[in-house]
Length: 321
Ligand SMILES: [Fe+2]
Ligand SMILES: [Fe+2]
Image 1 (cartoon, rainbow, N blue to C red):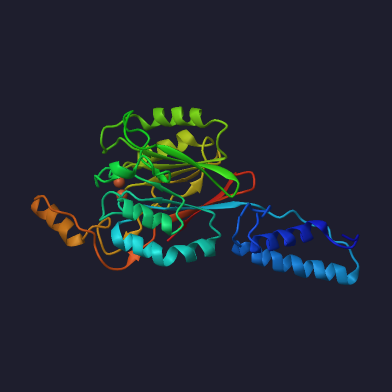
Image 2 (image 1 turned 90 degrees about the horizontal axis):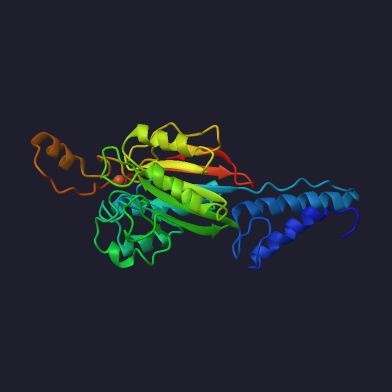
């Protein structure tokens, strides 16, 4: 390396070549794949480097900004929701430089529950972790695969001894990411106190993670806000699910926790919470029980993107629809 070249830039350029050749990238930790950002960075570095070499000048390198983007997708409803993701998720990931994807899958199979088939289908799209909610047990076959499914998280505040796990830790881009699922208790089934249980989990996770994301699956806005404030500064994000209607109150709380009351659903738009609207209207009018069916037609996305800097501090939360 001569005195008129920039070591950092050349090193970064070599890192890009390492990605192309399938070895590990030291900049972002990618293995065997080329992140879209790197192509641009590499091209820019090549130009800057060539400029300085040609003029015999020295360039003072600026440290590359390393960060992480997490995409959280709200309740995926049935085939319309899954098909939407099958067709659009890869573009979403590319356009938003997504590193880690979490999906709430409690409605992924026929509108309620999850099956091995929908679990595998979501993972096959590149999803990193799947959370659940009050419909966790709607499809009985879940009991056959939940224990060995290391990308599946059910509400942590179910009674002790309930199958499955309430949180899981996985590593991506060199970060240890814990995803926790909790259910609310207001207008919901009677389960353990989510505030008490999250205290126990956070104690257990001390020193074991870099990033903690909470999916708080609850009905009442007050309970969700209470959880957001309760965990502000203790986790990276408290993201509400369950109502299937996206709220517009996303923000980073003063302690640094990204918050939204509800991420919304990913499912058929001309519906009532993903269900065929005529069935639900008839049920309201007649008061008679009705068998719900997933609506058809065009699907919409309910999602948020959380950006973190190289110290894993949250820099922003934005809605993606
Ligand atoms: Fe749901
Ligand atoms: Fe739910």
